[in-house]
Image 1: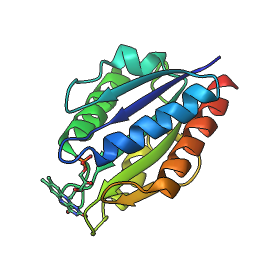
Image 2 (image 1 turned 90 degrees about the vertical axis):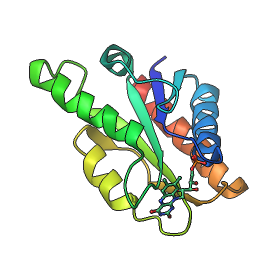
Image 3 (image 1 turned 135 degrees about the vertical axis):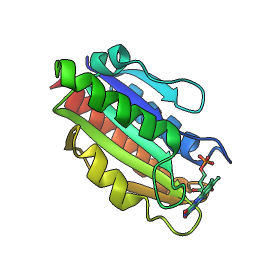
Image 4 (image 1 turned 90 degrees about the horizontal axis):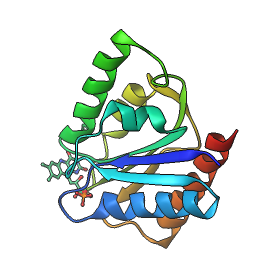
Length: 151
Ligand SMILES: Cc1cc2nc3c(=O)[nH]c(=O)nc-3n(C[C@H](O)[C@H](O)[C@H](O)COP(=O)(O)O)c2cc1C
């Protein structure tokens, strides 16, 4: 059994949190050991990141960019890997985001997280609250990440 970390930011309506919960459920159903962290509540330690075999990253679109908590994670990750890249690079990861109608966060999100490893599946977007189809895609992403984590 592999471990999947679901790291996301959600603060305004819970839209990104709903997507994160669906990714987490899909990964759990597929047999992964899942940890889920909202950067609005907790700054992720690099030890927790190191312990994950695969990761899902989620953010709302804030000013056509990542939410601050997710940017803090990327800053911490970049600084940590200067000392040691052990279990910090080459991880399989998936991406999801919510937005209010612009959704331009996709480009910086895909560009920045590409530094961390290999993307699994397609980036999932939701305008406002995720509908049933979007939640299904999130569960599927969780299952794909569980499979990648186990291999
Ligand atoms: C500070 C702030 C900036 C935002 N900027 C954008 C934006 O540039 N483009 C966009 O499409 N939505 C923008 N939104 C809308 C959020 O991305 C959207 O409501 C999102 O679903 C909130 O996610 P959450 O409920 O998980 O916090 C912004 C919201 C906030 C609070």
